[in-house]
Image (cartoon, rainbow, N blue to C red):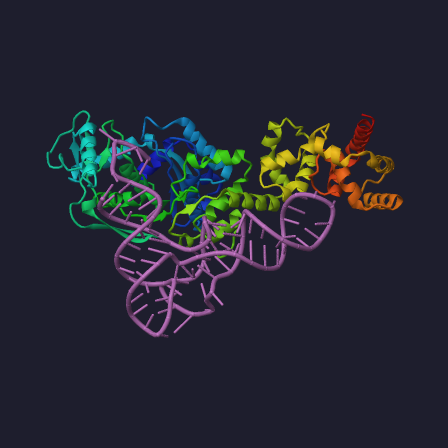
Amino acid sequence: MILLILLLNKACAIQTHTLYNLIIKPETKINMGNIITRFAPSPTGYLHIGGVRTALFNWLYARHNNGKFILRIEDTDAIRSTQESTDAILDGMRWLGIDYDEGPFLQSNRLDIYKEYTQKLLDSGHAYYCDCTPDMLEAKRKKALEENQKPKYDGTCRDKGLKQGHDMVIRFKTPLTGATIIHDDIKGNVSFQNTELDDLIIQKSDGNPTYNFAVVVDDATMGITNIIRGDDHLNNTPRQINIYEALGLPVPHFAHVPMILGQDKTGLSKRHGATAVTMYKEMGFLPQAIINYLARLGWSHGDQEIFTLDELIDKFSLKNVGKSAGVFNLEKLEWLNSQHIISTPSEIILPHLMPFLKKHSLPVDDKDYITAGIETLKKRSKTLLEMADAIKFYLADDIEIDKKAGEKFLKADMLSYMEDIYLRLEKLEKYTEKSLENIFVQIMETHQIKFGKIAQPLRVALTGTTVSPGIFEIIIVLGKKRVVKRIKNAIQYIKMIKTS
RNA sequence: GUCCCCAUCGUCUAGCCUGGUCCAGGACACCGGCCUUUCACGCCGGCAACAGGGGUUCAAAUCCCCUUGGGGACGCCA
């Protein structure tokens, strides 16, 4: 029965690569372990960095155990859920490379299933109709808080035996006695007295299920074996376990990961700066750096800091997830990003850098040339944004000489050296590292100067600024044509300054 | 307020389960130095923590209790 529902749901879900997986990669299915995890965001905003970590842990756990990872969109809040948010979540996950084996399933497509399970609870006496109005409830809640009590539903309708009617909700009959114990893979055993709980609403007056009920039905019918989520859900868990038990469904494993905090140690929010993944993309972070950072925030593997995706999959374990919340630290993310930029082949960085170049309206046609430029900038860029800025001098047709740099280094006394460099380079037929080296040795000997004397002026001539990759690196990458042209321009520049 | 969770350098963490090898290790940041054609990268060194108090024990960062501090939950949001 459950299987049938699952299949029906699959069929109507907007999903193509479930089929793809079944057809193209059947061996993967056969070899799969029995672990099934899921990420279940609600589409009420952008993809939050905290959500990404939850998704990542679920994904890593599934991949590590050769299991399945499912994406489910929890859109039972008809008012706040939007298609744009769903798209943002999907885009974000695609960019990060967190792929899913099934889904995205939409809860809004599964209303019949929730109805069916609600009826089961009604039939077995585990649920009842309630006509208490939101206003009434709100007043009681307020009063309880004022009296320093825990606001709980008082069970007004629990034994009224109300029949179905308009504007009614359905509540779950929480056991009045006993305790519910969570066996959490991260927190250990956590016990709640059932008297602390109350009769929660499982179906809203608009007919939609509430979160605590829908998750249980979904996780059970989708066969989720391990629920890994933020520990802000720990308090919900005993309610959910009670529902599993009332329904006679097997209770899955739970693992509640600590939350991510801002600098001020309160929950990470917009106040702390960027929380949407897209913002990190725009700031020039590589997805693998974000994944590395998020994985290491709360999880560790000895002293290792830098991980590739494969290493993460190989080494990830719930056992090494810490219990305490962590503060988000942009500096460390930046450092990790710089490390990943260094270790990622330039050809792979190129497509990530492209949007930034286009934004600067730089010519992007000569891919090989840009890639060579990237190679020289990798060690010097913490972000792609910085790299895009630093790479300008390679790509711009006419470089602009920074005023201060020009005044300091392109002075009259440089003229003879520059002219000499110009003449020698122009004649140079074999434009190689070796031959260039020879030329500069000759120049230094002829003029009896040290390389330091001409290095900065040359740098300014070639890049317009005092900061750049190594002189020889840029001379090689720029190529003879550009180098000669820029030196010629610098000579003009010096002459102009001289006469004015 | 009630309930639940948590507690090692400023931050992320190792160590804690299975007490001694820890006057606590690594990383980011910061501060020196080296390398050097600039800036970086890299390398070397430095600063810096077991929240407090009680136990248990020959011995506690590690086990127990209390206090304090922080976080979370208490919605017809998820």
